[in-house]
Picture 1 (tube, rainbow, N blue to C red):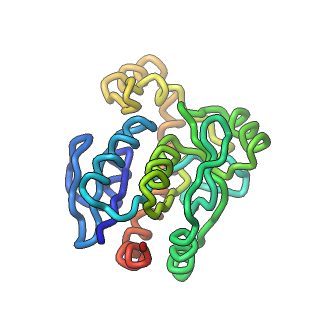
Picture 2: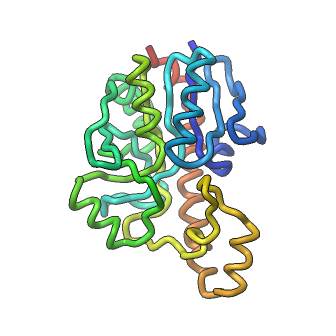
Picture 3: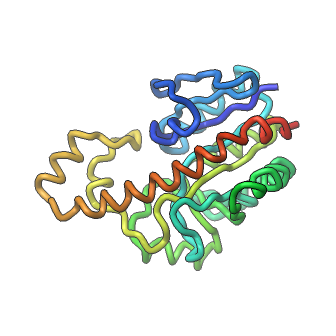
Length: 236
């Protein structure tokens, strides 16, 4: 049996492997784990999951960071989603057996949060917008990829698991520099980021703070990665 892990960003990929992958490329990181660097967003995640399915994976994991919506979630907190809502706030089906088994395994070494994960089709940068989404949906966090992967898993009757660490909490406003530097594929263009910072040097502190939060999330994901053999052994 081989589990497929979909990772949207290079910095999230680092928590699983030291290999450098191009977008859409896969790598076998253990006897039972195949990882793919998808790029950000639901379309990229869907294409990556479809590719993994053609490679014969028997389970899918959505791996990476998430934005916090619940006020109790702080940077670095681990979330194993126990429910999903799509961008229209409609429930998304997946079987919870693997999530519950993984929670038992990870709780032995890490604090584990559970809750609903909401799909977003774009970055949600303001605290007010995040707070309103939490009020409207009671979701604990949001990301852009997990729902697309879950839908394919359900369609192909494959086990599915969300492993996400909080990067930006509900109280944090994402720096304008991040939004400005994104391309149509959801990737940060470093040259655009650099020029924006030259024109708006006050944005630097926000980027530093985001970087520290992102590092906390990556540290958590790296700790989870050490338990992947146990987690994937539970997949059926």
